[in-house]
Length: 108
Image (cartoon, rainbow, N blue to C red; front, top):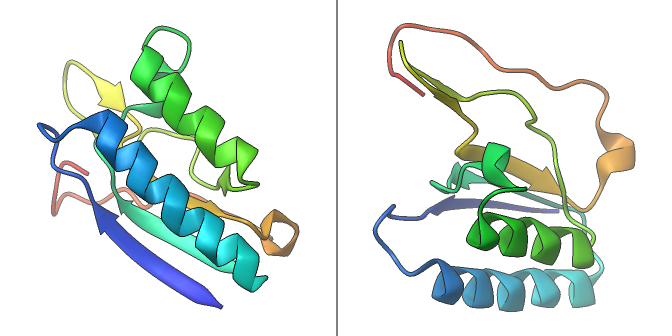
């Protein structure tokens, strides 16, 4: 099993990030192991249908058989809610339950 943790700076190049992540996830798939990738990716999955970079990111994950486990907002403010903190896996059949913990320690 591989557990990876990623932080993507919001001002970094999204295309370069996708290319590098795609390469690493492809390597993981060739190993044939169960993998869980978590992180503050700073790509709002809720923008899938309206943002080309977001749709390219998710399409790449799906193409490589990685599926998001988190599907609800992970960053909530008085004015917005986004899903920028991601957990995805290539072993969705092993997921029994997932959810978001709401605490006042951080805004996400």
